[in-house]
Length: 247
Ligand code: NAP
Image 1 (cartoon, rainbow, N blue to C red):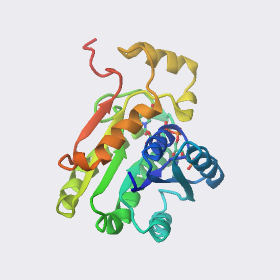
Image 2 (spheres, rainbow, N blue to C red):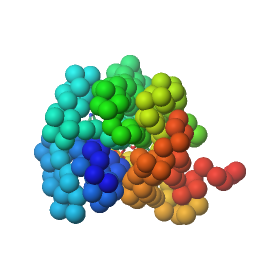
Image 3 (tube, rainbow, N blue to C red):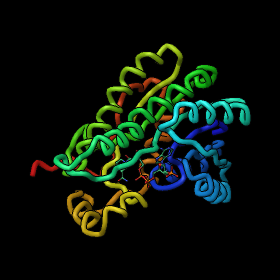
């Protein structure tokens, strides 16, 4: 592939799956996370898998941090071709008990974090042969609801509103902006929801299993190809058919 690909939240879970998928294609993959040690361990693992992976510490909630990440990556590789804006959190809080702090943390990470990462990479994507932005949203919010996640669901729907307007603004720059909407994918983060949740979710999926992180990786890879260049402002649901049943 020979492209430089940044994956926010790339040190574990879905982001690591996305990073691994691009690394296998020969991309220079930059894994961004707050915990630099974890990001470095991930990059070492992926680089050993025939890929080129590098770690950079960064916090998507911090505008300056995202600016620094993009600048450092550009100085190292001479281009930024793809941003996978994937970092996100999903703490649970019932609506009646939800505090402003709960709400703000989720919005600042998932929505404002997407804004920071996308805005910071625009000057560099404009210089690329073609630029690609792939946002990790969710079925929760845009399509479904789940008790305890009203803030999270709102954040994931907000990402799509942001994506559509960003796609319009960047269309003339040969930059596409699309989103992948995962269903339930087995990640470290989701494991934290506990066995009962994982069993309940697997049972509700027509394919009777949770998704793999690579399932999201391949969807992101497709949207990042040259061949997907006429697709912008769109979504791909990757959920094993979870949203299909009428009852
Ligand atoms: P995860 O396993 O908890 O991994 C989250 C990643 O994001 C980590 O690399 C974490 O590293 C990073 N991160 C968190 N806050 C950050 C911040 N402020 N700045 C930079 N990096 C940050 O989560 P996941 O399950 O893979 O979820 C990843 C994305 O997929 C999220 O956007 C989530 O909403 C979406 N999603 C997941 C599922 C699912 O089933 N798992 C379903 C639908 C959508 P550090 O903590 O070191 O920063």
